[in-house]
Every structure is written in structure tokens, then in C-alpha cells.
Length: 55
Image (tube, rainbow, N blue to C red; front, side, top):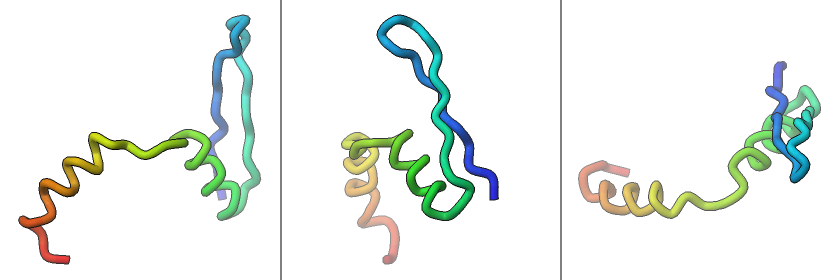
């Protein structure tokens, strides 16, 4: 299993690499680190589209 690492900039403009365990837990950790919060715009669109889709 391949779990993609993340790069980010520190306050001093240095690049840091964050690696994750090659496991299902590492994949979840990678995803939640990359997308830490709720996307209110996406949720609003989802709610607006709900009447047009059967659940």
C-alpha cells in the first residue's frame, strides 16, 4: 500500500515532508491531515442537490 507523503512550508519558508505509515490507518491519517476541516461550500451544495438524488 502506498500512502502519499505531504509537503508544507514552515514560517521560515523551509519545506517539511510528513510521511505516514503504509497501512489503512496511515491512509486515513494522511487524508485527515490534508483535509482537516469541514468544507461548508461542499456541504451546502450536497444539501441543495439532495432532493434530486435517491438515497
